[in-house]
Amino acid sequence: MAFRYSALLILALPLAACVEDNGSKAATATPTVGSSSDLSSFEGARAGQAEMGIQTLGFDLIRSEGLTSWWFNLSTGACARITTSNGVYSGVTMLPAGDC
Image 1 (tube, rainbow, N blue to C red):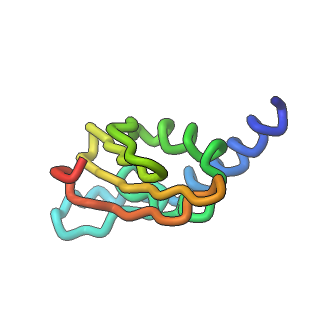
Image 2: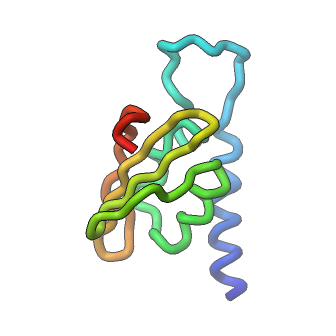
């Protein structure tokens, strides 16, 4: 059990350092990778360990179909489609909020 929490902490620490707030809220700004707006940095992560990190960023699981799940962050309006293969997030695609 301690290994699982240690691995989550190791995953979460680098992600926390990626968030940058320059004060700009421009609609054309690209979301920071590994932030509450962009989960693409989770591609390749072990699904069971990364799920808590995604929830910590404010995402909720909206639905699942087979090995594909859709996550939505109500605060930011970010939507992510995550495909799992062999216990690893094999594809992370950010989508328009309406797709969630």
